[in-house]
Image 1 (cartoon, rainbow, N blue to C red):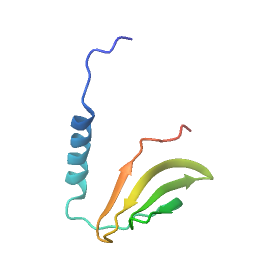
Image 2: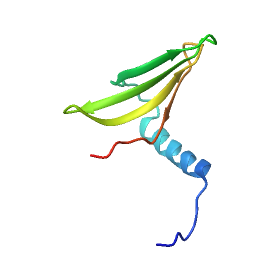
Image 3: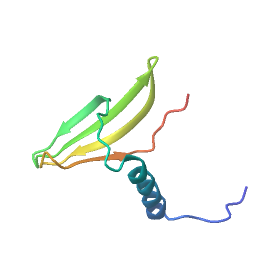
Image 4: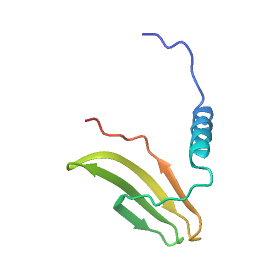
Length: 84
């Protein structure tokens, strides 16, 4: 199958960001996840991987950064969604 067109990664991520903003704007909630790994750096930043299991199988994972300033947390999805 030939690819008809291409899209820029930045355009797609901006689109996804807009959808998330629409759905979550002004809402507060707790996110329940397991920390599978965490690495502390001398810079004060911490890097972690969050996972969720269902019936003992990994169903989703993402990476996160806890910046040296405690109030600034960034989570970045890796796109690594295991196949069932």
